[in-house]
Image (cartoon, rainbow, N blue to C red; front, side, top):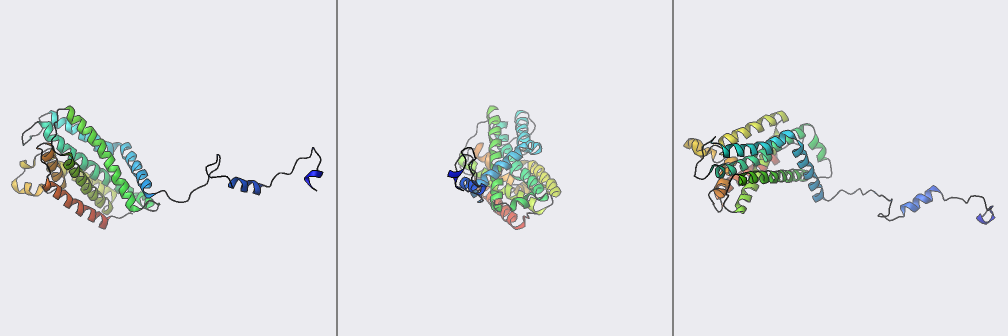
Length: 285
């Protein structure tokens, strides 16, 4: 029976669901109400940036890490620069001496201590193992963590430099030299953090990272000048990465040195050794 022979009040036949579905599939991808999943992974660069944003938000929301990375360096800068707690050397005001040392300590707290502890517990709870199974390559995960560290350090530098300038700090020297010192210091401490977190259990990483942090503050020229130690101890302590970083920052920011090649060479050597050790001994689970 054709449609012409049907009664006027009789409903017309409807298209089959398969045809309607096929018609819907024929709509362009950008049409309103249409959706079509794309199974392809996002570009690697976008995935790295997304991971870096996630790592940064996670660190800044962690009260313990925020205390270690932001609050303690700021309080130490105010305390040591405002009150005669320690002895300074080399002339100049207290803030001129302590500002470079506290900036170096801030890099140590973020690039080494915070990263080692966070990565150690991520490894313990198989977070790294699961992330390693995602489309994000493992080197991309490490790159995202490094970008997160740099982002947090930018927050640290803005806060500490603002406080120091408000307290009368007058820095000197070439900003490029300061940037090279901070980049090499961050690279060295990040490599040491990944080496430590990838080789030890999470609880051991927590203890060792905090212990090294305190030791470096005490003997690394952050608040106590290396000249206060004996000649023999001083000849050894000057090769620590924190000593090279703080000495280099003081050479540039306090004394106006153009390029501190000695501290830069020490930091570069530590960076190479730390990255090689992390690549050799880091375990994802």
